[in-house]
Image (cartoon, rainbow, N blue to C red; front, side, top):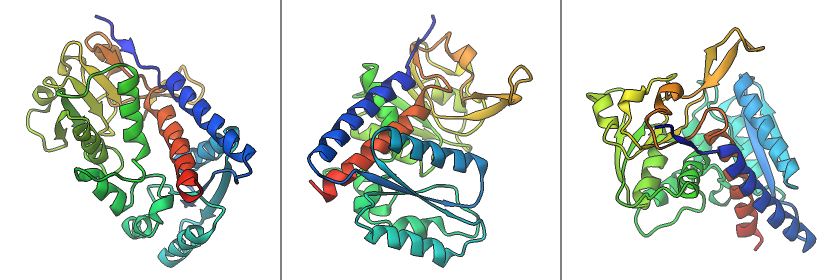
Length: 292
């Protein structure tokens, strides 16, 4: 068996095109362009690259972009002041605080003060709380998990009644991913570093979401034949044949898994493009909420 690829790049492009059409319609009607503000504390190269790519995406879709870059030793109070200022800025529709922040910053305090109508990352306690409760709807859903659901739906994967395993329990991916799958009537198991006989648990999965942050941890013989595999991981693997000296791989051993799974998302070109596409869609939604 050779798995079918879930092409996140092309699927994300369709989402971006839909967003661009709606942005153009709004601006043609005289409404201000939806605008995303990013807050970056410190000089992590990966975080800076993520922020840059988000700003570039905004410009490509006709949206506004504001960048707030603070030094690594910025005080907690300064970071909070920046977020509060953006909360009250009528030109800003969405606020994204790039994680992780330096160790001395209380991330939870910073995220908790983002206006719920501008919480386009979906991480504030109210949005997560609504996601966790039946009969309540968050204004925004975290971008990577919602992108994963979009990939599954586009591939025609039936979520209702499926046994889904989420490998990883982070606040950014694992936990909201599990909540979204439950909302779609899947039966969900969340695995982590202390799960007993992890391969055996994963072999029960009709749908596997790998988001553990460990390079190629999931082997082909861990996967149920025909299962759907969404690989959220992004890791640098040494490769002397590449100009940078490395190549990007996921949390799943792709060469092995592709021989067993029914569907699989590649790394790169799978979940990554969807995360930014869903962020753009959330920013548009924020503008629609604030200025219908």
